[in-house]
Image (cartoon, rainbow, N blue to C red; front, side, top):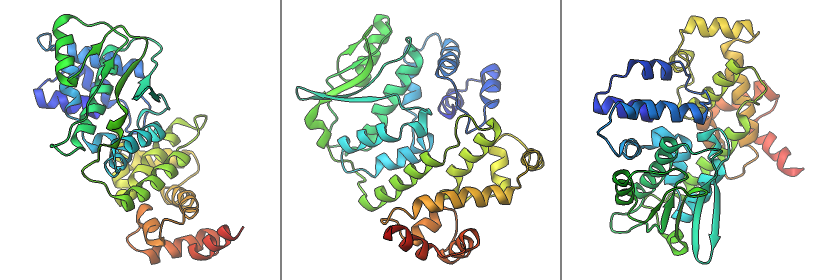
Length: 324
């Protein structure tokens, strides 16, 4: 959603109806893909002279739009590793696992099977993925694509724009949406490979997946906790910072939490405790790493909090856990 509003800001497209609908969604809300397609189509229709609006939107992709998944991909060693990470944790971005990787006869790829063609949404998704990966590769190298496929059709002008962007044949009206490239491209190194950071981020991503509220829980609670899980590693776990992300005042947020019999401090403690137990299962994370992931400024504060939750220290808890 932010990608679309950033594009509209860049081109000076006011579109009050679109912006009003976008603002009605909270940062942690799951937006149905059909609704996303409708919003993109509505915005693009206001630029009838632009044959490549989807590509212009995709070119604006940054790690901030993708969150921990984007930073995790940036820390990978090569393209193949990044593609596997993307598939493993895409639920953090799309809300559900939808991609499938393929490797046959020396050609690798990643593909989606939409229930029905969603032209704007599919083009933005594929183009943003390709553009983001290109940004992670040294300029002297190149990510060769064999082909890109879409389930919808396109007129000649737009088809040419797609092929110019992807620099390969683009197949329209295909059975699946996806990207295919030579298997050897999987070894293309990424410019910011950081193995230690990758281990840290992967542990965070895995814990975030486990900590996301269950689908049957209260919608408001899901929004609050999902947003809080994302805020903790940024060191911004304060109710004054959370409320604007949920498009409400601090007083309203406190009232709605109170209606559910929980205070802000209790919610923060519960979320941190849940994540702490998951992080302590990973021997690759130091106690300081875990403290920072939970939004604490130092290890001592984390230790005191953990003792209050569990009656023991994180170190003793980890030793007991690993001895079983």
